[in-house]
Image 1: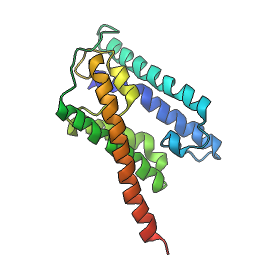
Image 2: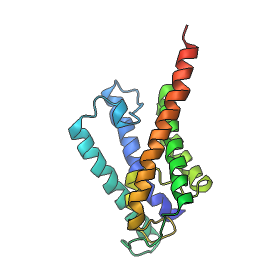
Image 3: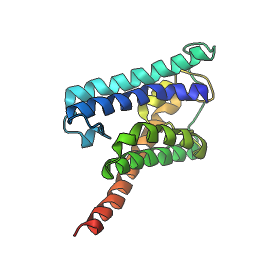
Amino acid sequence: MGEEAGGHLGAAGVVDADEQHGGRRRGGHGGGCPSVARCPQWDGPVVAAYVPAQIAGAIAGAILADAMFGEQLVNWSTHDRSAGHLLLGEVVATAGLVLLIFGLARTEHLRFAPVAVASYIGAAYWFTSSTSFANPAVTVGRAFTDTFAGIAPSSVPGFIGMQLIGGAVGLALAALIFTHRRTSGSK
């Protein structure tokens, strides 16, 4: 799982950086934002910097992992991941991740996001057919390695499309679960 983990290094660093930065911006208590939509302080310039930083981090993580394992630093993946069962696995992986993050936010446990997200991704690597990319930046990064964790550049658009669908499913589930909880829990 070494090379696969490298693709997530950049994304994990961004989650942690947001956790730290978000905490300072809100009074030092941690609890970064789970998404651009939920963070009013994330205006256009912040998002314009965040997206390329996450993609660059994922690419750098894949290259670093290849270096650590003695592989060629950049070797475009030849692993076709366009089969329907892999695309379905990516919807499940992404929906679960979004539901986890919004669940942590709604229950005021977002401070656990770095360890919870890492644990979820590690587990979803094994319980989904797609090996749980669950993030467009990670998907781009994993195109830079021809290890088992890689994804052929031609498969990247399909995976990102399924991540968008999975994100929408995760948001819908979060709204369904946590709107009901708020309604039934209020007096």
